[in-house]
Length: 352
Image 1 (cartoon, rainbow, N blue to C red):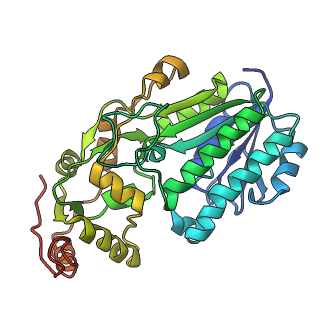
Image 2: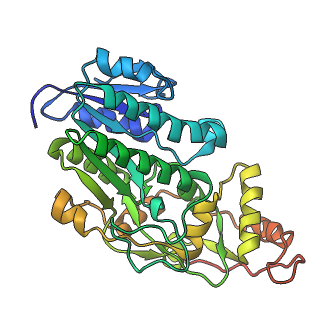
């Protein structure tokens, strides 16, 4: 890695982007780190310079040119509509923002490396999935809505950029669900519920990436300049039923249609959001092969899936018993998938 690199990081108003930018600024060989977002970050950026700019507009090209940026780390593909101001704004940030950023990189004479934080959501989740997805596999059911569709479109634009600019090292990191005590996402909000609704008859496989390993793999990608697409996840898998037992949480099994209906109710109370891609994951689960991450990217997560989840679970407060009754009452009001009429489903207790 050459000295005095100038790295631009998008999405620094959110905690993951801000923390990574600060981490990167302390690495040997990095001269400057420029953080970009539409609003200033809430926390301290340390030695990171901040430029208030909207990547959905051509102004991002001026920032890259003015700052002589040679490395771009794109972390603005987000999964939380609430933090973006709604689904419409979220799609603009994810898709239009990526298009403008890539257009700016394509015109730049100084950019020689692009690192994109993507997601294993790109593979979807269905009953036709293989045991483990490799990077060369496609989703069995192409996404039609939401964050999953955004990820698919973003990756398509990134691949197009890589073809047009073969002189730029393009690294795409398909990260498993990032988890940690401070991480806020649809999945972590679901796991923080005092009682967890589950899909009746399904026990999905889950993979996690500890938040500190996310920062490490992004920094590793910047340092090594290893081009390619890589699945990134902690070793091993965890069944949802195992996760519930380890958290000591109770669950309410619901038919599939009722599970989706509950998602709308939870969103209205701001307790959690169950977007379509999360409903699919919590039904069918997903597993990805990380051989290429270890053998070609040369990265090894410090936390396994189980270890990352254990640290998250240890940060959760005890669930109030009244929450079980509240969620069960809510479930009673939802139509069962096979009967079309309300039905109360049993609350299953977790281990204390």
